[in-house]
Image (cartoon, each protein chain N blue to C red):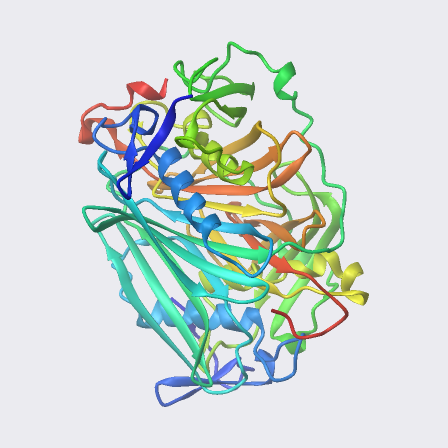
Length: 268
Length: 264
């Protein structure tokens, strides 16, 4: 669940009736009148955890499709059970901004009846985050606290990655509710565009989606993302994230980035 | 050439290669994901579109019976299209997929890291993923990392010797989608005491697949919670093209009647 927090922190949204009004933190870096994908992911996660009928299972997959720019106006989210089985439950969420459907999401919950012993030990990705050198590359104005651990290195599994980051969400999603570990993971899935910043002079590449696959539920405030881009010249790129918390790996995530020529133009 | 389906009278009739090894009464995930991907690819679009993401939901068995597919364009645009496809038997939906399609265009290129694994011609011909998926089988496989009776990460090449739908060759991207559904079998980490069907299949592609052989380099992670994920890197003979994931839900074999012999 998203977590109750101290009052008077920055927040991404303010509640208004049965909807949410985005604050400045939710602004898009690509166009001034729209919300950013990270904020949309956090709002979907918050409403999923506080409003949806998840059946008490474990979140195994979360997928968000950003269908058009979500205007920075009153926003509503509705979740429904699309398929409700005893062991598998699929939820569908729709986000409307300014009266238009701007994003839709699916959340797959599983309820296991038994479990084999763990097949592998958990290996911490290094840190802990409090001891790493702080080198934020996304401003704290974005509501995040990010620390680059190392770049162009390898992650805990020994695989290469282009970026290695600890991330936590400093701001509340709505007043009084900070980001849960799951919501933080969903937010972390949105930061991969920074791995290909060198292209930002000539290209606009907002993400069309984010998807997170959970092998277990994350714990704690910090998420570690070891990130690799796959940029193959066909108009899109896929960002691959390997996620860990301070205990070890818990999942994988991806973003699809869509390229158009020119910096900071409207996409899609 | 044999086929997974024959299209006749407006319905797809599943053939022997489409039979699920678990029950013999259902269609297998290879066929289901391939047919849904094919239908999404066939939806008209305003230009040359490519499949960028496919999320297949497979939460219950699809009967081995004549089937139809219903597609709905959820979002249509000049550059981006979101299409939902449902696999129906007797008008009831048993599986579905959501496909994100994008207009193929120019963008930067960064040389990907090569897998370092042997190409299919250099791969052992006597090392299929299961004992039946060898030379000449409609779905032919060659393991190049790990081994059939060995727990842990594994990689295999796949070639299809059968049409998905009789009389037409499926696109390389559709065949790449089909090839990765068996990743959970070859990268198993718990052994045959546990049944672990995948309840979904998600694929993320940075470019369209090319050629006839597709490499799936798979690793399963499960931490004793009763579920887990298979993570695969997908390649063709040119290089990496994307990633795939499957959610596994574990059930002790005694609880379902031991049906896992096929996995080895």
